[in-house]
Image (cartoon, rainbow, N blue to C red):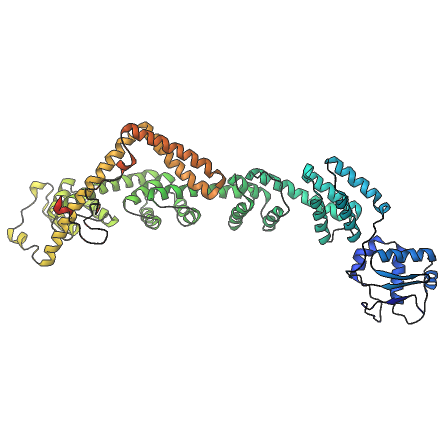
Length: 570
């Protein structure tokens, strides 16, 4: 009768099958005799011939006493169950079996390891509790990691954590290495050496971002991702330096943008970021002038600001054009169309843009006087172009243009009628009011006879009435603003408010950590501005037009669309 037999959980085969877990987990910690005895006994489990333990020990040249001790060792590993010692008879168990009694860890096996580990712990002034030390030894019994390799892991964690060294960090790091099949001293040393290089890089990134904690293993995933996408560390440093304050997720977005624009080295990254900041500043300033709220400047920079600057437009000129756009009710698309027209006309450099804006301002002021004379005329580029032709090409003075406006007061379409009058005066060479020829009475009487024309004339008169009222309210507000801006204290505080409002909008997008400080600075500037206004006997309300009729705001129409009757009451 053979001394060994299969358990009921073990499947017999025509060949001797050794489970991989035995090779990876148990074989490295057993000596040669123990491995030979285990494998030979495993083979005998499939043999029908009788082969007792003494015969097996003699064949393997292992003393019987030692042979019995070997299977005692395998029993501690839960690989066999010793049913009898005299004579020796064992039952083999599956390597992956979950049953079995706790193993007895031999102290002498880990004596040197324990001494080295205690030395490391003393450097940090730390002491692992007994159950933690037991878990470390159980880990070494369970996993095939070399003792010296584990000590290297402990030393690495000590350098990284210092006084904050914890048992969980050491064991977790060792388990991670085992999952990556890194068991030997050489394998662990190579992994930690590479890890330390990245640690230095990540530490610099943390310093640039103002992050004051130790890097965690998940933080390295970002760095590995950036390097895998071809980013150089200098480019990542440039992005972190540009942000000044932030988090790794927000830095990840910016690095992705650099990658998208192929700015993967330090020099190109810094050039791109400087350009990006310039364009963002232009977007915020133009948006403020246009009265448009912009939270994320990048889409506006990509679509508009980049094109404008590439065509030679400078920030000062763009801000002037945006101020003009505000008066015309423009947004970014309309301003872009205006700049396109100017570009095709060669109006690009600062001086030509300034001259254009000054000329348009003069035309706008003249348009306002025309509105007061003949009724509501919309502020459009077409209207300004028509007035420009009258002034610059037909060479009419403002006096003549306003005379034409007065005579167009009852017209249903004032501007076309003014154009008709001025063209007639140009044909006859009238350059002064006293040179304007008188029109026949019959022609004047027959000019507007049908009901539609009469109604249009009444509507025009009403519009002219309200336009004059609105203009008076707007002029009062403009005069109050001009009086305040003549005071240096108010002027400086108001400029600081505008500057900090733009800075706050930029900080909310690019540097959230700085937003609170900018907001505080803005509050201080607003307080100084309020003090200056109080000293001048003014308030912010004085800068807003005070309309004669609060019901219709001097438009002639109520919010529900009905006509207001304030023209009859006032």
